Image (tube, rainbow, N blue to C red; front, side, top):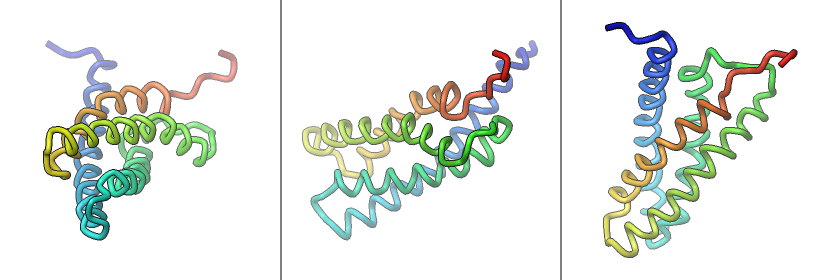
Length: 142
């Protein structure tokens, strides 16, 4: 049984998104470990700083790898803004809330809690990236 091209392309893109995500997760966890060591007890601030740097990392790779076929005529800054308004907000809000619950209330270690938060946010982030942040350019006449 052969998958329709649209579904096959979506699966390939999902795999690419997750490959970038796994690398980004390693970057974020490494940064969080460093920031948490520099400023112990301030895990929420450390998490937000790690997320911002990871967002920039992931944006660069998604532009060049995951959605390289969807470059439109918009400026790089506009695409980065869309990525931050979608993936950034989901990641910041999701990580903040989940980290607060998982560390402060469930007493999970910071890195374990962050791993859960990243995985949880990734599903929404893929949908927002595919449908808006890296959406196909609309024809001028549409």
